[in-house]
Length: 179
Image (cartoon, rainbow, N blue to C red; front, side, top):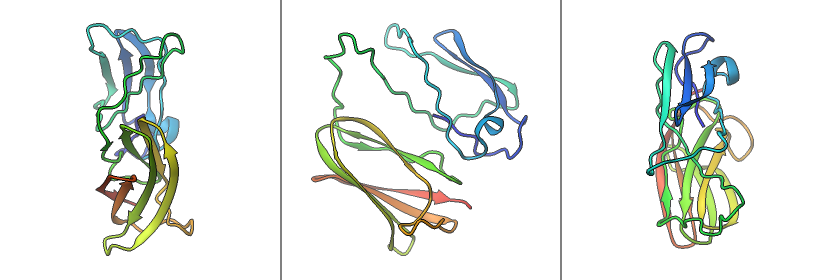
């Protein structure tokens, strides 16, 4: 997943993406494709990783191919995938993009079954948005938040805090919403 967070017009940042030496995206202009601050997800099937190194290159055509966050997920093949590795620990990542306008993604990893809730608080500590995600199994997850309060209205620009809470663990991070 990736997003354009700086430019507000098409043609300002264009680049190619190569994975393991093969071009998987040519002349990518994120603003032209999805707009500013909106995530774009690119699935690359059949990637053969050798020696434990995933080789990804962002090759600039116009301006810099600037990356400030990337999520890489193993999707599996369905064949002999019974040995899938369990995450070693419970972890909450920093949201991206940050600052954001429109939507942001909060990555988190569960090492065991857990009941997850995500709450958002304003700078005064008031709960402005609550999400019950329910029972989830070990693995990597990404929660997309649209910057709206519990009433469904867009929140004002500012600093907010999000808390991801399970039955035994909890973590809080800061995010910035720009309207």
